[in-house]
Length: 149
Image (cartoon, rainbow, N blue to C red; front, side, top):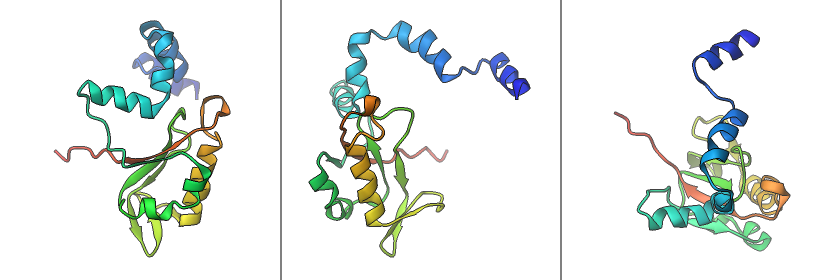
């Protein structure tokens, strides 16, 4: 284990703490943290400056909306559900397709029912994945596809 760590370190690979301490904290004024910690606000600013961001077809903000997620998902084929103020990628579910009333991860390894997705979105709204456990919103976001070339 130590050997792998040293090999990565020699190759210049940083851990999250080193990255945050050496680059993020040093080069980003603290006053901007609330903006980038909220994915909805951050997307708005990026768009205003002409920076492309994934499509945001919907945002779920209340438990009432979470309980009625089906119609919101109906027009979507491939998408991600993610917390607006989450961190480290926690709470993100990626959907690649839908078949027989179930949503399927891109690799086909996970299948979700509508109840599963409603429960997950409810957890996001309750702050399960947010910074500091604060109430949150759930983004239904388009997927970013890599260039096949």
